[in-house]
Image (cartoon, rainbow, N blue to C red; front, side, top):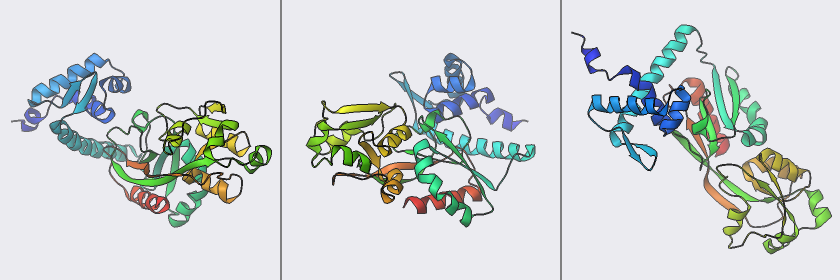
Length: 300
């Protein structure tokens, strides 16, 4: 008697469930698997009927895993990860000495690049691949082993490894100070050009939310320049176009080299500014463990 076949749920429902659980959305799962949302809903309903229990709670066009759904997803993720790893090994694609770090472009350019030599000196036998993202991690479809992103962005079912703190304060170039003078108080910002980074979802702190920490309104009379990339906005600050909201982890090297200055004493500390995630369902290889340990040390 084929007991395994009688115990297994409908296999056609497994990938739709895994994608919906990981992405937290039936529609996003449909996009990823290139099928309709109705097909995702139908497969998950068949799975729930087979198991005799609800795996998702549906409310207001959103879906959330139930307690049973979380438990089933955890087991399924481990099993699928093992199957995928073994399949890659059989295909000859597994390289235990290779590890992929996914990070936001800003951290990649300003924080990671100056530190890469440190990782390679400590682990010369491992090859690090770096990928960047501009959208939340939940929307990233490529491969990674460890990912870094702002803590307020959606990460789906990818497990949190740890969080790191940061400090946020205005920055500008010395040349800007020479041309327009150093603003003595936050109330003088209305006389200056403020640089903005416009993205969706918004970063944890922009000019309006940063000023609100000090009970200061946004200066509507201030001149402004807006960019769709933090790196572009940051470069605009370096080249003297105005004042930007800076993050210690990305601005420190520029401050140390006097390419930027912090004109105000005020700053906002964020204890959980940056989050580091593992990949949902993956097996933690030595290369991944070493990268995680290195990141913990560098971000401490």
